[in-house]
Length: 611
Image 1 (cartoon, rainbow, N blue to C red):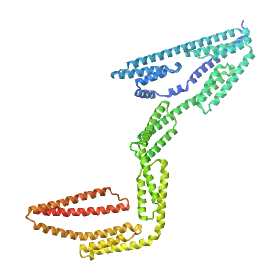
Image 2: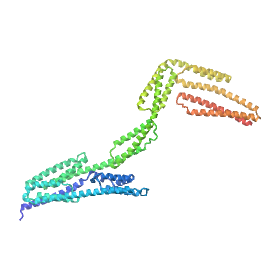
Image 3: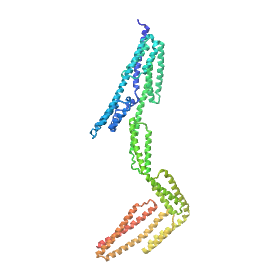
Image 4: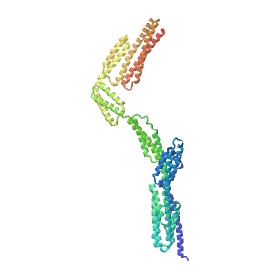
């Protein structure tokens, strides 16, 4: 007849076994889910559309040689690091590319044989490694089953429980230290191991104090793991917290059972703490994917902005430097952006780097090609500096001042020079110019009264020129008087600078008015004389023809002279006051030539009417 106390203990131990089995299964399920690698989690986030897009992009870039190079690169890896999918994808890509190239003149038969040999070697190495791993897992399973059998044997030896307990703990540690078994056997072997431990702990007539001590020790260790798991939920480093959680789960599985009445409670608390860490881990990867998408869009926009820049028309150092600042600002924006996805980040950086390299290569080429120009510009500016320094002590204010103004204009028209000489030469040049003009300004303060007197004298000459229009009786008298007034004008010195151009314009207008008045009368007289001459030879076609030829040669001469003046006028600039005066003088000559041409054409028409 069975002992009632033993029967009661047996019933209680049966319940304990059921709870421990539930705990073991839950640990196995949770650990399997949590043990997933972070890289695998990240890969699961990729959508089928992204994988398809990657395949399309890969096909654009693949060549038989590049696929062969990838296969050779796999040969350098350890078999554990080679995925079967990688080998399969390489074979598919090579086959597809080989089919595309079959219509070409030279088919890569030798390359295909080499590729097939490499793929075969990779498969053999992978197969050998897989077989080795399978054997290792089988050995691990056999060792674990042997340990379970020994624990069950110890459980059956109820008379020596106190003596066998150290061996029992040693077997547990050995079991936990053994590596992985086949995934299909993992749950079963853990369940058998748990049942064996529970049988040893609960179903045998062991010393109650020893069992209570073991439960208490296991509870303390699990409570410590629970507390650490709860603190991981607040850890800022989500990745480190997740990895630490996997370590806690491994340790939890290695710790033995606790008292039956608190087993479910402590496991539920640990599972809830783990769920919080796993939730933050998943949210972290989703947020990182969103940030990577934003960074990808921003980096794509910067690539497009950079590619839209046209630096083919840059011809000066200033324009190249302005464009360089633009490129540098775009690069600074790029550095502020975070990473895109691993695949796109490499592609975008290569695209961005290619555009930057193209710009700086073009800039370097431009600088190499302009070295001779820089040297010539440097020599030119050095010459101007030496001239300015040699002239700065001159007291011929007018002539030297004109030369300084001409040199300043010439300086502006010279191109760039090397930067290391630019500031020093500019300082020397401006110092010489400022020195001369400061001396001129001081020396010119005593000439203002003389200039005012000259202004009054020249205004009087303008008045006398205007009076010739009414007072002169003949052209000869008017021309003689005008030349005398012009001589007096030349003998008079400078006038105030602000009155110079306006005064000279009034003077030229007065001279032109005198010339125009008497030129019209002279032209009319010449016309009458010519008509009288033509009337005398009218009827003699030979003389009329010779006269017409003479007029026609004069007409062509005037026309050629007019074209010369008009061409020269196109090269003159009126940006300066001296240039503007020269342009006006040229325009007056052109008008006189046009009047002469019109007069000769009238004479030719008159002759033609008599022939």
